[in-house]
Image 1 (tube, each protein chain N blue to C red):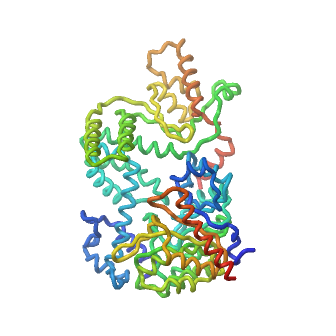
Image 2: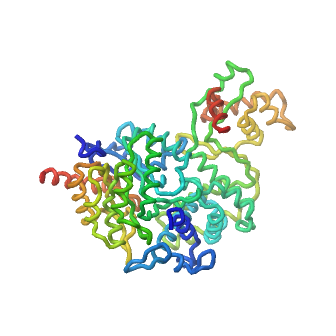
Image 3: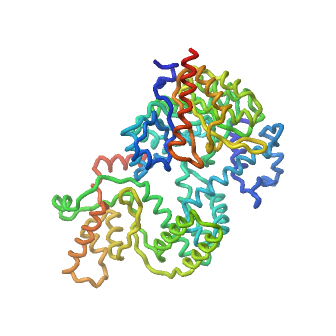
Length: 281
Length: 306
């Protein structure tokens, strides 16, 4: 039974991101993993080894696509070539839902390849929601948008980030990929209480949760995905599943990637919080 | 300030080159103070000014795109050296910022751009251009489409003068320097260096410089192809190169043979044997694919028109 209307995948459990350094281990050892998340753009190609590996993974595991360059918040329309390639990949993976970020990254056809923060305005929410609907209609699968880590805020913002996220997903009628590490990073960079964020999002729309590690600098925190998850982030995770129910959870580890076992064991810590939540209920 | 204005202003600031000390420029392109520009749309906080917050994105942008180019063009970097490669990369990215959703395509215009900016690769411009072409061909061969393999005999059984198609991932290069050997040596140095101390890596750099300096012009006809999902370089004769090029252009087998051997002193009695041996070899490598179906050609034509 789904925990909420946007979360029909409560049995997905805890997955990890599929990364090149782990290819050989996964293909030869065939470890038990609930599911893998792939970065869509790494496989939006015409052929070669990445797709060959992906096909082998698809034979054995459940795979969910996560994008990094749809840029729902960019003012310009979605790139048609991008959409066509993404749809081809969606047909290949049969991903049950697809996620990308609530951010922007391109203007007038020029790409930054970064997840740039949105101004939290009603105009931006309307345009972003419209684009999410267009992409969903083209791809014909459910979409969930992820909150990003940010290092800047804009004078023009008219609401908090979680109010903006809520506005967008309500207008687009889509799900949320709640990244609790990103909430923590942004809360430190912008001095807000991260629990206010977790408590402020519509829990019934949380389709997936991301957990990850980050790097601390003197005056800010950078979302580097190169460390284990810290305790305050686990606490946010516990609160998130308390509100949203059992939710497909994914550990991201993208830099200084350790062994497969180390990454997987870090991800599996999430199961302990799910078990504690079940006992509490 | 609306969404589009914010995004245009921010991207312009983010993509402005860093100072030599890897900080954000104190002045915007129009000469205004960058502190003032940043303060107009970015909020400061209790630890960082508007300028400093924008600078985080400015630095991330340049670190990301420079690292991507460096990874894709290690051979070019070895030829011109790291400092000149960094200067070249910055100049290229200012003129040709990414217009693709994927960083994979970041270097797609590098050869074209270098032809009009040879100052970045002098005095070894021909060698450097050959290397750029090879490194881009390798990217294309790595993830290019592969279609079902065709056995040439199957085609010949139904058509005595067929048009053979080459696999889309195959790249044909006519080079003026043996950059294939050079690139493999450079890579060998890189992989040997993973566990090296600083002293050893200094010695290795000198070896690399000598290898580059040793490079003499030599006509090389190269096929960059894929076997078992790995990319390989295969040198071929000039006639074989012309032959494959003609096949790629859609010529019939007989026209291809005429083009390949035009003006060559090859006895007609030997021609058939040469072509047969080529086909046997190329076929075993899976280089031929089935002809496009008429429907696919019609669809492609409609797509081009629309």
